[in-house]
Image (tube, rainbow, N blue to C red; front, side):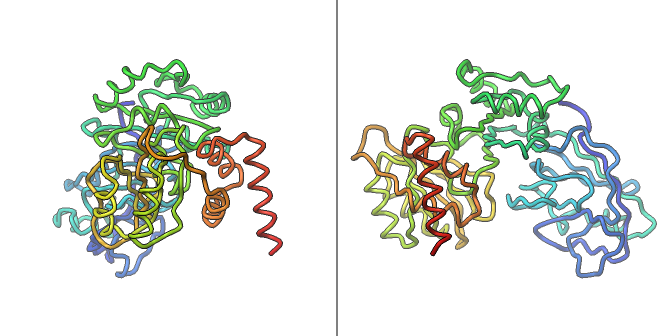
Length: 381
């Protein structure tokens, strides 16, 4: 897993200002206007890529002549060569996002580097390398056949790959090709102690499932000290991914604090997921007592945060209050509410059915019949 992951070149441009405080961008277009304040290079071209894509913590070095700067960030395995490459300080991932959670933006690059970036005669070199000084983390990938390229990038970044079902094993075998660096482990035979030790040593563990929206392996390995990513699930299910796969998931269709608190108290044995403004969270979490918490900004659907450190500000977040085993009455999952909420996000019927199987303990046939019946009923209204 050592060595250069990506080499790219750009040209300087007279209109490069590099004053944007949240992103920096390597633009594919050869021309920009002064309004493109995040652009730090134009006519971007990839010359070397070690895998179908890149994933995990990286160091991005930008050089123009003898001047250079290094940005530390988390690569986005969704990004593909040929598109503009955006590096964001936030966790928001889109198709053109090369990396997120960066420690620098365009405006905080050394100003002496700007002299080279704004010279049309300059060649700008970009090198992306794996950052071994930062913990790799735990990744839960809900995979489908259309995800093979992205899965290949995640496998290349992993030190261990855990597969939860036979289809997941087949997808991993297809995605990894000749890459045999990371061992592939059956979840039923996984040594939890060894995997936990690997995470504590800063390695990256990838758990792949095609048949479940939650994982016992993930629930046992996840902690506030381990960076965590969830790929292939909508935000409400991503934020609940660390809760026990045997506990029901309740989606609260409520936005005021009183209604949310009431639902959390009523469903002590469930993973309760709701949406609210970040500045409302502390009171809700305090009322929940000694229950685990996971949060996820609405615009950052792949990097849930676990632990007591809550996001600040007024922007909306998703939150999951973890269940307490053996406490409270049994919870009946609101199947229509769950289905409609996920359908509104464009989630596939197959993923919704699996969510019902995980959160309500339903059989495959029962889940599919309810989803299809409700979908058909909505379409006829």
